[in-house]
Length: 322
Image: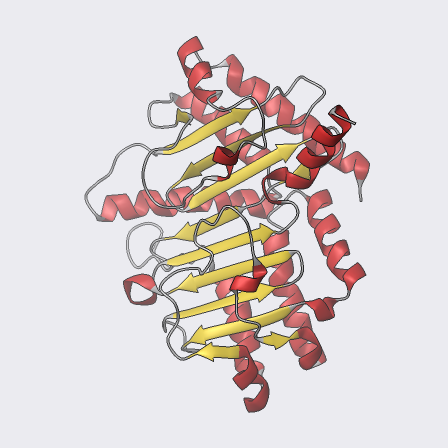
């Protein structure tokens, strides 16, 4: 693990939080800090990617400086491509509202948990329609799952963003993989002719790869197909800051990529309604583009041990009471 880079990410995140706090009034700070004292409280595993209010500070009433500070905090929790993806979810949501004649301010909620200046773990999250970012930080480690990005529409057909496909690479890599499979291998990978209407895990508080179809194993693929699956997995991991993305990939390599499997449902032609997932002992990735006649996409990356920073929190509270 790149400890020094992880420490640098934690410092950058702390600075971004301080910058945000410096431009908020006392009432806004109180809203931002909405949350229980313990970061392992069950209510902190409640989340959704649907529209509607959440606990925390709403971005709806923020001025320009305050919104810039929120954007900087969001960027600090991602790689450069990951930050672009998170911003893109907000931009596509703006387009959706404009096309529905419901233009208005962005409605996302930011929540600071714990003390960024203390010795213990702390975190923050940003949630709203089609964006859910959950961050837990210690001095030398970071966790960023569950991580959800959606796009409605999946392909923008009009306006200044016409042609934009926010989750295009996530869709295209998986389609290339399933299309390249020979008939017997494809029969193992495709678990249904009709895709589910949404990701199967929805907003489950605990990630369970066992909920997903087994599909085709990495070992059952050709070398070229294995490389496609690796690229697909890396596309999701690389949303995170570099040091953590490398840590997650190194864990997969250490276990052996044979632990991975890929499953698909639905049509294979562009524009067809479809779904896919990738699962491993610690990894869970889902993608669907099924609603609105296949023009409304969801994507999620979960980590069985790391979601909500569970492993870091367990170690911290065990040490406190050891």
